[in-house]
Length: 214
Length: 91
Image (cartoon, rainbow over all chains, first blue to last red; front, side, top):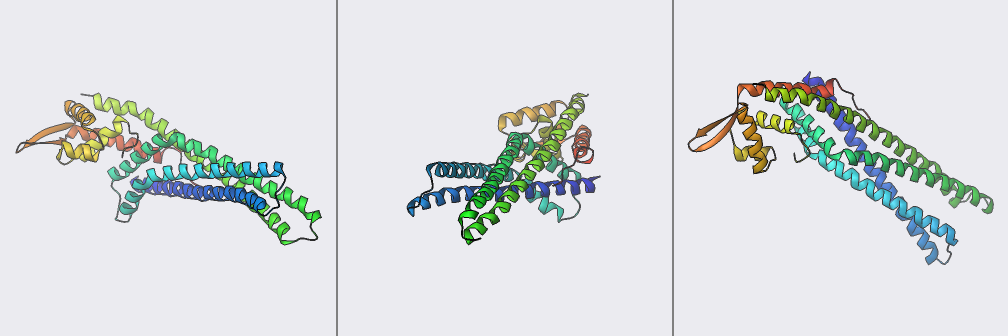
């Protein structure tokens, strides 16, 4: 039973860590895109060719939104990852050194249960941040598409700017869709652990009886 | 592990750690407890006969009794069952 459980534990730990690392990467992308939007808007002003006040306001608000989402995204991911550091190190060190004793495995499971219990709110919040990030990128993709369609007739032909805008549209939309799929996976993770917490809670009655029996 | 553990999880950690004689300081250090809560947990387990207190040359040590094996086995079965019987997560 232990070997199977060790494998299952390892798979879940790796899956969750990969999910968090990808989230951090996409959070950093949202942060970078947000800042890029703000900076390019100000550069237009510096170059003496400012866009209309409405467009400037929309761009700056979009940039601020992206920056904020990205910042919190990275922050929350890092916080969750930090809590797993000890378990990951122990797991890595022990699995390479022969069979894992049942107590060691149970200790890891206790650590994961405690980690989830402590970070439950944060992990659920992460699902919402991922959705917000996905919507941000999707909106950017749609904005790129609209911008490209509007710029196309005005341009003498498919110039570099128009190609760049049309290229950015599927990229941003794609990142948005991947990000939303992360949110689905975070929900699945949280759902799995909610069931486990419930099962552990139900088992407490038998543990209580074992402690109180004479 | 300074995360949120239940008292049952802490009892299990103490009992597994005390399979060999341990001092109070070693137990609270290993199980991440403060002196007050450490006293409470150890007092409870000793009072219920899960831990025996021995004095070696003026130094008190705690060791898990035979009764502790039943609790740790039940606990192990329950927590490993979370992965064996419960739902699984894959990316």
